[in-house]
Image (cartoon, rainbow, N blue to C red; front, top):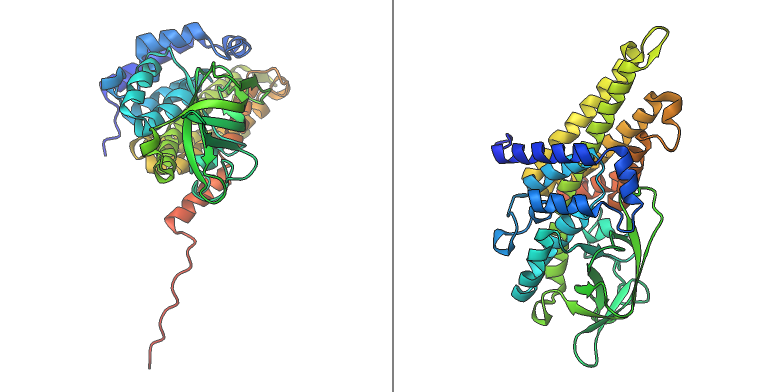
Length: 400
């Protein structure tokens, strides 16, 4: 394994940091999330056209850059530093891999080029608070009725009278669901006896589709409630490829790469929160000296530095080997939570005000753990898959 970044990757990092440093200060982020889209469309187009950001994970034959998961993770680390509100996670990390893996040749040709160019944004709609389960991060996505289970609730799909499919149901926590032009909806079909989970494509102008933006703890992660009232939909992959096993495996594979990107994003946020805190304590004086010179403060910051760097190493390793993504995500989310919490503490009285910039990082830490965790479940499921808690066989008695 060669852990060193290539010259191209270093250039991506440098250019992205330069652009975001000019356009994504805390005030700009707060202004962007309060727009109808929930992000700065002009900045998103600049990132798409100049860096090909949404096309990093798209194969070159479909107009993308065709990069490795490490490149996407590197970009996410930089967007995480500034808490960039954008469709990058929902589109590039969640929907593009699913369309690439399951879509027909016609679907890939029609959807991937505009997704890579940034002209089309997509969102993955999973019923209920089950995104982590659907992506097989905190449990087996083949077990449990997370998408409806053939019963009432979730999203149900039935074949239309004139061909095609019709969807009805609700998904309450859809990342960027209010602004995405394309929805990938996980739905159950076949009733209770032949229940199976499939993915369907729904356009933003589909009749019967109702979308409403939700009030969330972290405004940089906008979410929407999606209601499907007998909505026409297209099966992703076509009727011949609509097998549940393939869909569930594609969701799990997407979860592995997405968790690596999320881990890098959380590390970027944690690193920036730590840097801002160090800068503050070095300038804030008490008793005639900077509070950063006090030994107790130095020890707390040193502990945070070790935790952030350990999480960064885990995130980089997961970018090289996405199978370790869930564990890296757990460590990165924990590092972000601890760093953001200490940032509020070390900023003192101003840090405790809800409007202070430190709370942006604290909200991101709490919201991401609710969406993709919690940390203890990420680790528990990884341990189960590794067989760490499997009881050992009883040793045979040896005759004396």
